[in-house]
Image (cartoon, rainbow, N blue to C red):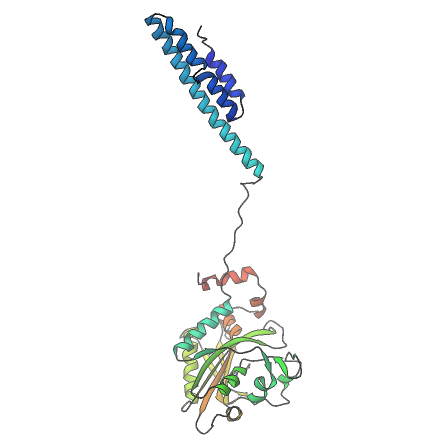
Length: 331
Ligand code: DAH
């Protein structure tokens, strides 16, 4: 009456189903209230005690085996379903993920911030001004003569007869002096434009301009501040050379050179005492006030500091170049 190979038959049947619903039907068939196992227990009721015990041990064993098989098959079906789902999603989980690079501050911007930090600590206020400028602020008020070569199309990008892309940040000197009274101590930075393109020039580059107007401002103050600044920026050991020079808006004027790794002197800034004509143009009393001004080429400073021999590298957006300045990150 008790089939010995029932477990084998059940196993075969259980392994032939492919979904949980059919598996549950088999579970009821074998283990349910009216199922095969329950029926076996009912059938042995009439047997004598000893036989009953022996048979019930067998039936219980079969029950456990069938339970085990059902649980195992259930897990397998669930796993198959999961695999099927993954396959249907058509996601190749073996593909490498997309790596998103974290950007970093451009070296030119970092240098501007660094320089601003120095000058704000000694009382300079940061200001900004327009890149599209008129002839008055870019040339006339700065005492640049009408026939100066910088005014020609060979050097300047003209938008119309009176408007141009500023060739220098010195335009801000005029804008500030016109709207504020001395003492004035400002620093400005930004893009300037000139019609030039080679390994040392790009049509757009950056300048930083400082202006200091007060009652007792001397040429030695200017020299002192420039030396302090250059020691801050290049370190105390850097070799600095002051050279007499000429700018229409300063008198006397000077230029500063720094000795690079190849023992060449590289010009990095122009400066001088603000020319009385410039002060007069902005109605500052020249018998009471003096001042100095300076203008730095930011790319030049960056090239010197990082030993870069072509200015164009800053603007080619080559990630291999820019990556080298990742240490400037704020993140
Ligand atoms: N504007 C000058 C240039 O672009 C640099 C300069 C020289 C700025 C002397 C100054 C200065 O303020 O005093 O070459």
